[in-house]
Amino acid sequence: MYSYESSKVLFERAQQSIPGGVNSPVRAFKSVGGTPVFIKKAKGAYLYDADDNQYIDYIASWGPMILGHAYEPVVKAICDRAQFSTSFGAPTELEIEMAELIKSMAPNIDLIRMVNSGTEACMSALRLARGYTGKNKFIKFEGCYHGHADPFLVKAGSGVATFNIQTVPGVTATTAKDTLTCAYNNLDAVKKLVSENTNEIAAIIVEPVPGNMGCILPQEGFLEGLRTICDEENIVLIFDEVMTGFRLALGGAQEKLGVNADLVTYGKVIGAGMPVGAFGGKKKLWQHIAPLGNVYQGGTLSGNPIAMIAGYTLLKEMKENPSLLKELDDKTQYLKIGLEKVLKAWGQPYIINHLGSMISVHFSNKPVTDFASAAASDIEKFKKFFHAMLKRGVYLPPSAYESWFLNNALSYEDLDKTIKAVGESLEKI
Ligand code: PMP
Image 1 (cartoon, rainbow, N blue to C red):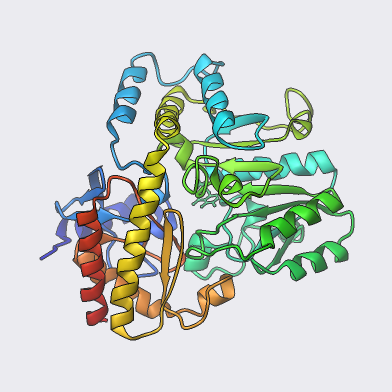
Image 2 (cartoon, rainbow, N blue to C red):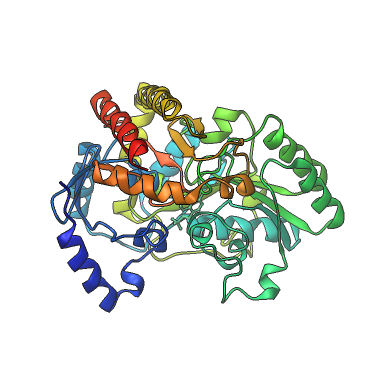
């Protein structure tokens, strides 16, 4: 029987000194109710909370723990490097090695710059696209999340959708008016926006496989259509691969889906869970960034040696052992088949969206292809399901608007336990 007494005490205490008791909103369990569990440690596929409960983890720190928590080569590399100081604020050879490694894995990256989060990566990529094209507006898709920089907090996914914040106070109307939005997978709506704003659109930013409204798949021709529009209209196509990069394939969604972006943003994955982000892309754009050009962008801790060595070690391991991603995809496929079996037996409507090691279950009877269809699923049912799973030792994202992320430390026994827990949970809700 799971008890959460220590987490309850910690949550009470946290609220006295941290807003809402958390440093990022979705962690608060506000949308699913109950007390957030405070995590003490993690190893492999398991999280351990303050009450010593063990959970099979399907968040993987929202993506980066692709090979599992406390992956030994990564831990060792961090410890070894920390002896030589944690920051210099000056260039290092390690940053070159990291850039070269990413270039060797991901397509369309002539140059890449490190930042400290996915938010910074997307914010900087947008600024570069604007500086390069000399245009101000951009298109984003409803339910896609690109971090919390002002221009992206318009019809955003993830926590913004979880908390149903339609208009974010603090984001001025002046800023928001340059953010044009339409439904994901709706190419006609994109064409309409482009024709209504001729020569005004600097960029289209998209999660190629969104994970911030649950997992959603691009319909055939959608991303290719965006590519064509961008080519025709001198618009910069930005793929936000913060979640999909190095997960869907070593070359991310670009490789998996065969569509090229002009700029690509990365985040947590490339730091193996350390605070990192990056944006990379074609050479012609980079001539405009400082110190080469006047689009200013910088960061004291950017290219931080501890973050670099952690990410470098993880990515190198994945590059040298491509079978690791294949194993992970096979495990996700196995989970999907198991989930389908128990969900079918349950006899109520459900939709499973799945690609590579991203997967979500939507309690819905219609295909989930965009934010509106994701929001039409039974969110109340998800809440009950989440808690029933938690009690059975399975830690799912505490929101119906988040993809599950598998990690390769999961054993087939863990997957079987998860499938069994799903069956029992569905019986309860
Ligand atoms: N883009 C995407 C696709 C994301 O999922 C996230 C965060 N989950 C971000 C950007 C922002 O990254 P960060 O939280 O590191 O700022």
